[in-house]
Amino acid sequence: MTLETTLWDAAAHLTTSEDMAAYLDAALEDGDPSLIAAALGDIARAHGMSSVAQEAGVGRESLYKSLSLNGNPEFATVLKVLTSLGLRLRAEPAHG
Image 1 (cartoon, rainbow, N blue to C red):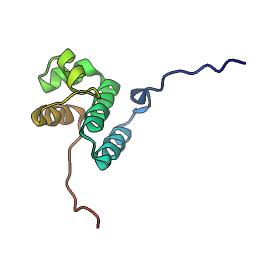
Image 2: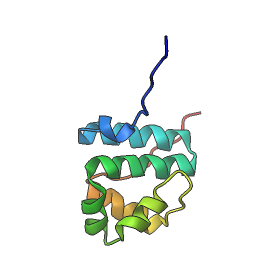
Image 3: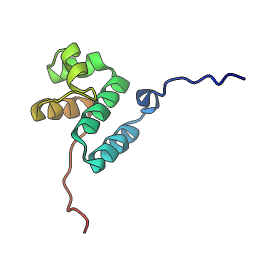
Image 4: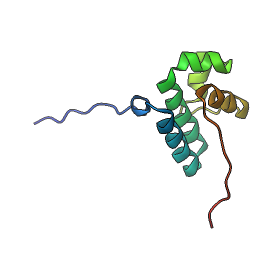
């Protein structure tokens, strides 16, 4: 019996703004910058990369590249993307 698998795409499961915020929050909690950029890319894809890029004033292809696992977006780009997604960063004291 052959086992068939399919790729899991996080963007397909990010259907509400609450889902998107929780997903980004989990990536921020991990603290890995490449994971955070990739999570933001998943959220942007779920929302519609073309519309996010247009609202953020960034080229779609460059946004795909900078929000990939190997991307390194500028902080200004991250803030523009968050704004276009209706999300925001928030600071809180670290535990312990």
